[in-house]
Length: 427
Image (tube, rainbow, N blue to C red; front, top):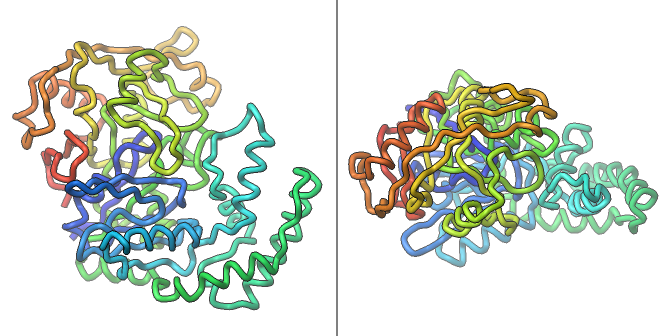
C-alpha cells in the first residue's frame, strides 16, 4: 500500500483540503509535515464548512489518524482552540497525534513577527504575523522550544530564559518595546502540558511502522511550491519546505518509502501577500475570479491576488517535486468566459523563456506570454465523469495537462466533497 505526498503546486490556497478529504476515507494516516497556523484548508462536507488552520484535513475522516509531524511549528493556544471548535461540532478529535519534536510558537515569537514586519515598512514580506518565521529561526539557531519541553519545567524555564536574554534586547533597543517576562511565558506554556499530554507521541516510529505494515499514509503540505523557503520566490516565501522533500525531513520517513507525489493545481492562479506574480490581473477579470472563486484567505482573511493559469509554474512544480499526478481544482470558476488565456512562457528582456528563471531579478521582470483557449458556458458542477464536461472544458484540462508535465488524475468541479471527477485512482 502506498505512501503519498499531497502538496500545493502554486502559491498555496489551491484546494489541498478538498483533495486530502477526498482521500481521507481511504487512508490510515494524514500527516502535516511543515508550516504552522499560517496555512489554511477549507473542507465542505454536506452543508457543513470546516476551516482548518493547523490540524490535518484527515481529522474530518472517521477511521483516519491525523498526525502533526516534527516539521510543523505549533501554537498550542491555536491548536487547543481548533480542537475545541471541532469537538463542539461533533467531530472526534481523540485520535490526533503530535510529534514531541515539533517546535512551539511562543508569545515572544508572535510579538517579534508583528513588530519586525511593521518595522520593514514598504519592504515587508507579507507574513501572517503568527510567529511562524521567528519560531523556525529559533529552531535553526538551536534555541527553539519543542513540544516535549512542556513536560520538563526545568528545561522549559532554561530555554525560555535563554531565548529572552537576546530577544528582550532586540525588543527594547531596536523596536522600543517592553521586555517580556520569562515567568509569564513559562507559566502560560506549562498550562498547555496537561491538555496536550495525551496527544504527544513518537510519530516518526509510528509512521514508519505503519508504512512497513502496509497501511496508507498521506503526507499533507501547507502553503505551496512557490512559497518554499529554498525553491520558492524568495524572500516572499514561508519559512519551511512545502515541497515534497519536506515530507521526509518533516516526518522522519525516508524518500524510498514514498510512492506518489500529487500536486494540487487551481485552474487559474492566486497568491496572498507580497511578491512577483506574472499573470496577476488588476482588471475586471481579476475581480471576477476573486468573487466567483471566493478568493479570501482561510487563515489570513486577506483577499487573494488572482490571475490566469501559469503553465511555467506548473512545470516547475512538476520538476522540483517529482510530481506523479495533478489534482486540478476550481474548474467551475472559469465557467462563463468566452476565451481563457493561459500563460505558456515568459518574456524577459525581449527573450522568450519557458522555464522558471532562477534569478529573482528576472522573475520580477517576467511578462506572461499567453495562448488563448475557448471557454464554456455550461454548468459543470454536476459532472461525474470527464466525458460529461463540455468539450471546451475537456480541451482546457487536456491543454493544461500537456503544458504541466504530469497527468491530471482528478478535477474539482465545485466546492462540495462529492463535486470531484476522478480520472485515475491515487491509491
